[in-house]
Image 1 (tube, rainbow over the protein chains, first blue to last red):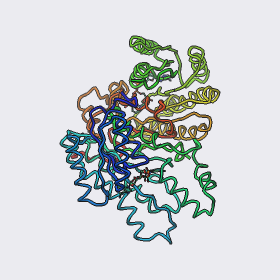
Image 2: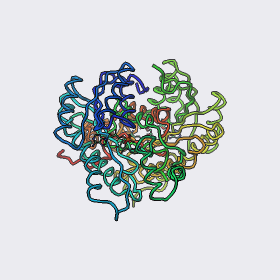
Image 3: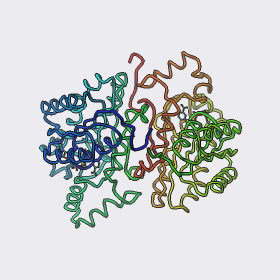
Image 4: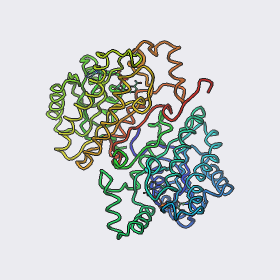
Length: 263
Length: 262
Ligand SMILES: NC(=O)c1ccc[n+]([C@@H]2O[C@H](COP(=O)([O-])OP(=O)(O)OC[C@H]3O[C@@H](n4cnc5c(N)ncnc54)[C@H](O)[C@@H]3O)[C@@H](O)[C@H]2O)c1
Ligand SMILES: NC(=O)c1ccc[n+]([C@@H]2O[C@H](COP(=O)([O-])OP(=O)(O)OC[C@H]3O[C@@H](n4cnc5c(N)ncnc54)[C@H](O)[C@@H]3O)[C@@H](O)[C@H]2O)c1
């Protein structure tokens, strides 16, 4: 029932930002649990490689190049995904970018890009998937916010604003779409071992004038469990939220942060 | 397919009824060995029977969770029987009186706080001592959607459930370094005896049932199994990085305000 395998039998999923990191791990877990998956990412080579790796493991996976800020292209890819899989009932809007800069140095272009990918991208993914989920008689719209979508982090105003906005989308759409049998949830990871974490370490090292090791130590100091999450641990939360085990769960941000936000 | 809680030893309080009973049966099916506790001996033994009937293993213990000595005895009995304690679901609870704050009876307040908040505190104390000595464990406390928002006229219940979340976060931070995860589950309106038979307006009355169902965006009450599955997930290794989280299982109630015409 809620074991890691077998809970998403027959489900048809699309995952954005699926080329690597959390998106790639979630796609793999979805497959292991019985789903078929289309991976979408702006990184064409990366997403092709990720889908090929899943196929090599015997899963049904396809890759599509798409920038989630390009409405026409994204819409096409979502329609294609539905066609490839014979419908869609599981969506993970996960593509995201990190921006770390103090207010004085934060350009409008950076702020706008952060909002475009993290907020508009999530909105567009949900909007264009909606018709397919309705046609399927319901499903789950999932997305990736962050611990920075629940609490403030200095020099991360653009990123925090974007991730708080994602929680607003989730809470509002959970109400609006419940009568269509559609659940809407987010996962809010703490720092997670991905390329984005390495980018965070670089940015923090720059701002704190520390070497990379010292910056990592400072970033992990506030995590009660004393380490970052693995992408697989975050992926497991998506499997739970996607599965029938979470049938009465909607409108939440499930926090996977090793206790960081409790203190 | 491997079972979610294979070889784990779990303690469940308030196991005689509702969410506690359903969680006990699910845990048994998922491979856990169970120590079950309640003040209702007959109900608790019936739950143990249901677990065993499905091939599980369960020990039923009489315990009032508001009594520190009884709680100590309970944890010792569980460890004596099964050798350790991997998971605990501190679920025993009462609904209590329904009155405006100014009229809320002190004795009624004390009773709700004693069971719903002090009971969780005492249970956690004994469980944490055991789990720290093992270097591992997972605790789930029964909070409620009214640990996050409030319903009117439930002063003691709301306060106790808000308190459970505070206690959960405190223990999560304090014991993460000992390998113990502590989370809460926050059910919305669930079809259990507490809701169907309890209070002045039991949901067994169709009009009351419809009104309660209308509070949730999903327009229905939740079933005990839907809460049980969240508890099982939090207790399992799939949630290895989750601690201090109040997991809301409420059909969308806490996400926002639904108006009657919607
Ligand atoms: N790693 C962390 O510590 C962490 C913590 C909290 C939240 N998150 C969130 O998790 C999500 C996944 O991040 P990750 O850690 O796996 O990072 P990552 O950088 O490894 O992966 C992000 C993926 O998104 C893709 N992407 C970026 N912009 C895109 C666009 N416009 N269109 C299509 N694809 C695009 C990238 O190509 C990349 O494959 C993001 O939303 C991120 O904000 C990450
Ligand atoms: N049903 C709901 O809608 C709902 C919603 C949110 C939270 N909860 C919480 O879930 C938990 C279980 O509730 P339920 O709905 O299954 O209720 P229930 O009344 O069906 O079961 C509660 C059980 O707790 C036992 N209990 C009461 N006082 C005790 C004590 N002092 N020591 C030991 N056991 C005691 C009762 O005998 C009963 O078996 C409670 O903590 C409740 O507050 C329930």
